[in-house]
Length: 306
Ligand code: NAD
Image 1 (tube, rainbow, N blue to C red):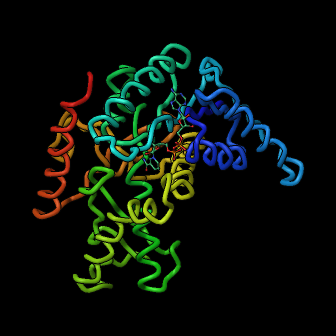
Image 2 (image 1 turned 180 degrees about the vertical axis):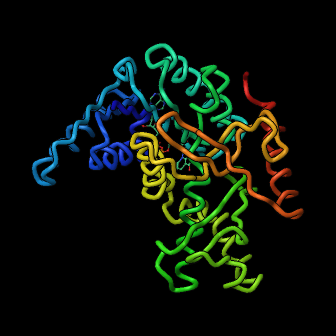
Image 3 (image 1 turned 90 degrees about the horizontal axis):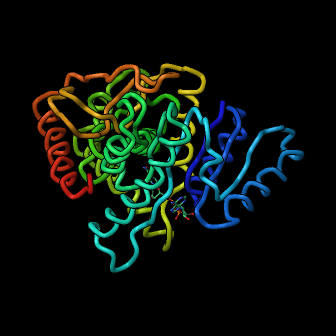
C-alpha cells in the first residue's frame, strides 16, 4: 500500500513518522520547499536501526512521486499570519489545494483523499469539486481530533481512563462544532447521566476552545501531536479495512437534512473510504445547532473559487 502526505510541515512530517512506525505501507512525504521533506525523511530513516523497524519512507519536492498512491493526505497550506484576513487565508490555501488536487487527480486518480488543511470543511468541499472524485473518496479530518480532545477533558474531569470514553463530536471543525454529551458515553453510560449540565457545558466549551488555547500557548504554529494521531487512526482504518465509525468531514446529500456541504458526521470507514454516513437521532436542540453549523458553512462556501 502506498500512502502519500503532501505538506512536510509539523502535521505532515509527524503523520509520516507515525504511519511509517505503524508499518502500514510505503510512505511518501512531499513538500514544495526544496530539501525539506527529503531531509526529514533521511532523519526518520536514520532511526530505523534503533527502533528495529524496516519502515519505508521517502521525502521529495516532486509531487509526481505520489504516483499510484492508494491514500493521499493533504496537509499543505499556510497558517493564518498576523494581519491576514480569514478571506485571504482561504484564497491562498484554496490556490495551494487546487494545484495539489489537480496533480493528485493526474497521477493517483484512484486514491482516497484525506484533507487536513484549514479551513477544514471548506477545503474538503473544494478538494471534492476540484478532483471530481466520488464523495466516498474525499473527506476531511477535523471532528476526529475534536472528539479526542473532548475525551481527554472528560477523562480528567471524571478521573476515568480515556480508553473508557466513546466521544461524539459533529458539525464544522471550528467554533460551531458540536461535542454531543448525550451521545458521548463512558463504558456505555451517557455523559449526561454522569455530569450535571453546567459541568458538561464547561467541557464542551473547553473542547471548542482547545485549538486556540494551544495556539496561544505555543506562540507560533498550531497543534500537531494530536492531529497527526487522528490522521493516523483514519488512514489505518482505510488501509486495514477496519470499518470503524469515526467523525469525519463528509459530503452530505440530504443526510441530517443538509445538502451540498462537507461537515463533520460519524461515518463508517473501510478500504473504499466512506462506507456509510451514520445518522444520529438528534433532538430538536441538537438538530437546530447542527443545521446552523451547516448553514454557516454553506454561506462561507460562496467565497470559494469553484
Ligand atoms: P506547517 O506550516 O508546519 O506546514 C505546512 C507545510 O505545507 C509547509 O512545510 C509548506 O512548505 C507546505 N506547503 C505549502 N504549499 C505546498 C504545496 N503546494 N505542496 C506541498 N507542500 C506545500 O503547518 P502544519 O502545522 O503542518 O499545518 C498544516 C495545515 O493543517 C494547516 O492548514 C493547519 O491549519 C491544518 N491543521 C488542521 C488540523 C485539523 O484538525 N484539520 C489540525 C492541525 C492543523
